[in-house]
Length: 103
Image 1 (tube, helix red, strand yellow):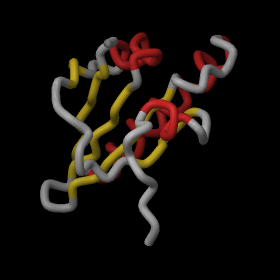
Image 2 (image 1 turned 60 degrees about the horizontal axis):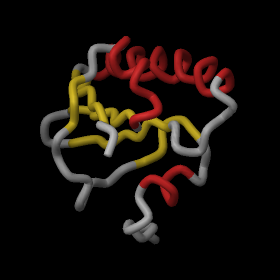
Image 3 (image 1 turned 60 degrees about the vertical axis):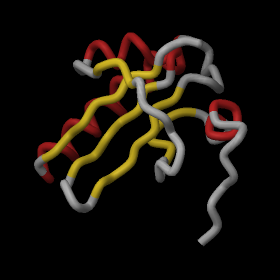
Image 4 (image 1 turned 30 degrees about the vertical axis):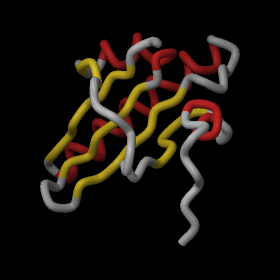
């Protein structure tokens, strides 16, 4: 299995700017690659530590490395993930065992 990469971002306003830079950099790569459904970046937010974590799918490796993300060896169990950028179907494709949460 290919590796996922993650990037932790803290500090409110600069975190938003970094996330926006990641999103802006993703689109040309994504479109240039033919919009693969398994190329995506997900995010989660930890209120306690005021930390955003971005998770780069294996197909987004070049972007992960560009932004200094490290290899993610953890598990996605019980992660509250949101699709940041990519195809809306990527959650179902990349996480087939995860049931969509309904609030």
